[in-house]
Image (cartoon, rainbow, N blue to C red):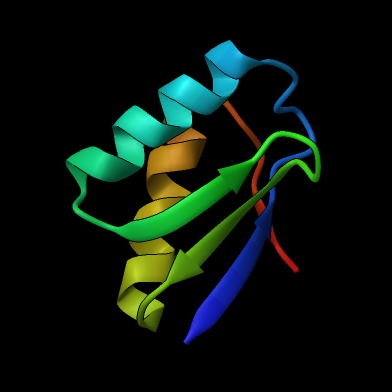
Length: 65
């Protein structure tokens, strides 16, 4: 299943790199769009909870769309 996660406080390529690093460390299948300020996650509900936690740990405020 695909989930769209809005990350409105993602403002630059540095933010994208930090999110990529954190989600790669969790071995998740995802893509990040700075233009849309979203993360598209391909996975299960457990993967979604893991991704949200990892993004929050970076100081962002993610919301599932």
